[in-house]
Every structure is written in C-alpha cells, then in structure tokens.
Figure 1 (cartoon, rainbow, N blue to C red):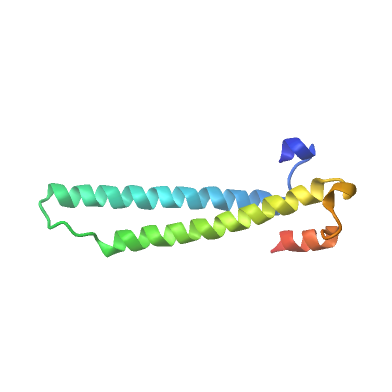
Figure 2 (tube, rainbow, N blue to C red):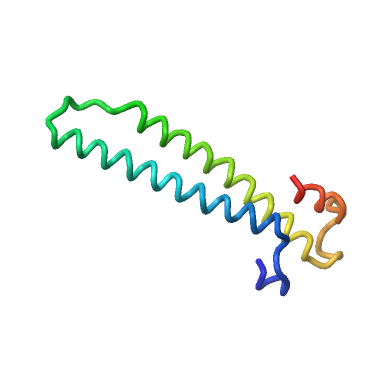
Length: 104
C-alpha cells in the first residue's frame, strides 16, 4: 500500500499490522505446542485423548487472529482511502470519518 500511495501509512495502520503478525505467531506457537504435547504423550504410552488445555489455547489464539485480521483489514482500507486522491474516494468516504475509524 505504501508503494501505491507513495507515502508511509499512518501509525495506527502499522500497529494493526504488527498485531496481526503477533496473532499469526500466537497461532503458530499454540499449534506447535499442541503437536509437541500430543507427541510426548504418545511416546509415554498415555491414553490417546487430547488435553483440553492445549485445544483451548489454540482456540483462543485462533479467535485472537480473527479479531486482528478484521482490524488489520479495516485499517488497511482506511489507510488506502486516506491516501487516494479526492476524486477516487467516492461520495460516501470523508476524510474526517476515515481519521475517526483509524483512531479505533
């Protein structure tokens, strides 16, 4: 988006993208932990059942990823709209409304 606009993105957009990357890494870590714990239990000869703690951690991280994805998508859209020339924005988008959306 920065290459398209020829300017840097607002700080709130950059923060939203950083939170999205953190959420992706959180899902990766939770899944890695779940797989490793399942492998350890299998090696120890424990009965084959899933530990709810691992599954709940993974579910929580996937939920956080969904929230971060929606926020990043909205922030990118607002950042793009702010950088577009007035004639390309359309009648419904106003600069003040986009600034307000980026504050959230």
